[in-house]
Length: 423
Image (cartoon, rainbow, N blue to C red; front, side):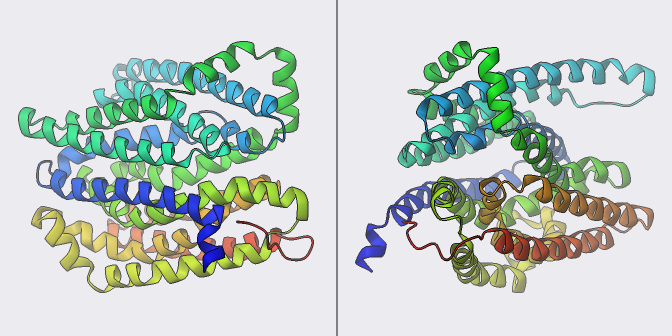
């Protein structure tokens, strides 16, 4: 026990876990308060905004930020920071151009676009920049700063949204809260690192860029599309729901996943951030992290099963009590999604294995199959005018592809014998 408590892995995970737990507690408690200020129709606009930003963020730096932890030399790691930032800015230019074209097409193709889309580039810049700096911070073990940043983002986001909703009675407050929260998080995590990142971007030469693209080509080629497909599975469904069903259906979907994903963000993301650089270093030495992957599966199952079990047994009572009668249908959809979210909870932290062992291209195939199954599920539900049928097929297909992924992650995390020195 003494050795376990002295483990750097356990200590760093605990720091991030406490930070993420505090942030999630704020977000969940805030979500309950926001549900009594904003109704499902008002949340529909925020769902649309969140879907747009989440999908763009998934490839905003072409996943070069994930590679920051991998190089042995600090110089090369710094170059990756610069390349990530440069890629983010170029993607944002394309996003702005896309928004202009979308608005220009309204008159030609007879469709309407929420004005909130104009704020997407603002949020994406600060969230994307913070994301890059988070990986640089993680490489250098400044986990406390990461934790403080998470807590601050959650507190400012919820506080601003509640205050705006109470004073202005305008659903745009949900979006303003999200933007202000990301700005504060960027200030905290970037107070020491922003100038360094900008300088790294300025110092980047064409020779450096070619070298980095050659060495880390799998991140933009496979990992970025993989992340994009993963986010399309979760957030792109919002656009599909808007096509087949009333706008409040997307709000119920968004709210149910937002609350159910709390344990995933609480535990899974903290383990992921610590596991990824540790696994990368260990794999370079031993070429085997298979047994460690099994241990993480076991720990996550023990931690997650009681939480999701209680949620599954008492879904309606819990959701109606916390969100209010207006959101009763959220409980119906949440009950359907629980098996899928639990399976995703078990696999999410271990997904870093694909980057460590350079199997992103194969992971992309899993993601494509998962996306196709989910789209088919919602389309079937839409054709039958039955959202419950669509969501049931969505959840079942998600469980199936996730279980297959768990076996595959274990299989590729091998070469030599066991890994026993992590931590």
